[in-house]
Amino acid sequence: MAPEDSAEAAPLLRSFERRFLAARALSSFPWQSLEEKLRDSSGSELLLDILQKTVKHPLCMKHPPSVKYAWSFLSELIRKPSGDSITLCESTAIISHGTTGLVTWNAALYLAEWAMENPAGFAHRTVLELGSGAGLTGLAICKMCRPRAYVFSDCHSHVLEQLQGNVLLNGLSLEPNVAALAQHPEHDTADAESPRVMVARVDWDVVTVPQLAAFQPDIVIAADVLYCPETVLSLVGVLQKLSACQKDQRVPDAYVAFTIRNPETCQLFTTELGRAGIPWEEVPRHDQKLFPYEEHSEMAILKLML
Image (cartoon, rainbow, N blue to C red):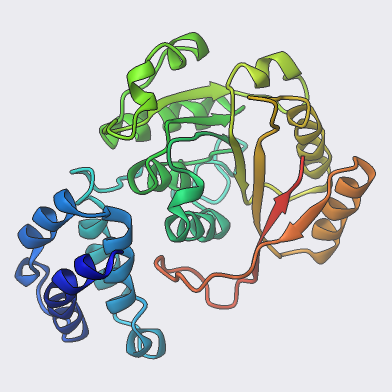
């Protein structure tokens, strides 16, 4: 944020800080002033500053507020740039209809936090998400990081049905196919209010390079998809196919987030990446703890050089 903007925002930041630390009613926060300020400044930087003064404040990191209060505050804050909060329909069971994709897993929250801390990496770019599940990560990126287009993908019919519902539930329009996704040049401008969005069926084992290339991805992401050896092998296979997809003479960037539940599975992933000739590096851990998830969970994000 420019120095002059920072000085003008200081009173607003202090107001948010004092009210949040005192756990005041959300209705008492200066939301209208925030909306006015967002129209005249860099929205993502201001929102990040507010997060630093509230949920990421040192006192809150040491003595966190209730989960309900933090969720309510974040839900209200995240809808200010776009006019909508993130609302999800999820299964209450970990495994439902033979899939784990109907609930939000910890690494999806972790990846969403990292994306919100690094919005420039997604702004005005086309994102392809592999194994989108309930859609939390993608919806957060669509609302907070201003991508040009976003492709949610999965292969299970119930997951795809739920994904479509969650996208529509959050006020985003769905493009019917890949051709329609590329037919709106007005979205290529920085003034586009919302990204082009589609939900695609992508079976990692049978999808072809031309089918993946049709999405024209600039960046590929996946969260919590390393849960068994068979899935690891399928994921590496589809990443190899993506390495053959070039846009403007460049292959897409790729990031995979995961919870380290079984070290052997994680080791298998990095071993298979090596065999496939895909270099990788671990992304430095971020401290953007916005969502409530198990404190003991150990998570990581790998950047892959396709």
